[in-house]
Length: 261
Image (tube, rainbow, N blue to C red; front, side, top):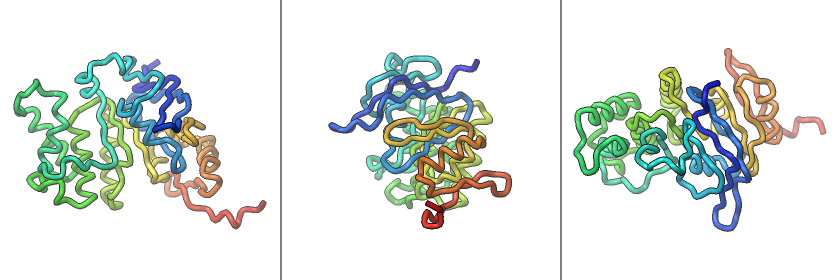
């Protein structure tokens, strides 16, 4: 059996005095795209940050069979790439330099970028259609443009596992479609993608779905399974309905006033 890309064992996370994740046990398949969804406040971003070692936690996280807490930070950063929702600390850097930051785990200490680094950055920026504004500062870019630069930075790492928290924020429908094609290409290359998404219909295009509610995993299964659809409707209090449309599954809002008591 193929080893999971990521595995959490008894994962607890607290924000201040409030516990937001309650003993999560989770195994995420390698070479697949898994989407994490759930109501607001379910703990989705906290889960992703804990998996990326960006939040203090109790419990264990394993990356490709290795205990992340025991992995050197440099090796971890080479194997696990992160894309967050916002980046407010790099506004004066050019888009090119922001993406080059993704190459730091691959560079020797204080060594300048080499030809391989430059090629990886160019490839990542072209893949996200960000190459044309490589010389513009991040502060000069729109929200959608900035999001594509941050995605390029995550790609430039060339990690085996990519974690993306709300990667579709500020992206218009055509660029959401581009993101989908990019994720499918990554999975075809054997990479693992884990995304937190609010766009439920987009999340249903993944291979697997993880449903969170109140800091707990309430369901994990294939996106095409009827059991996953029922669990999805339940976790959103029957306010959405999962239906087939043009050979795919979509989630549509449901007027709860029309549902018989």
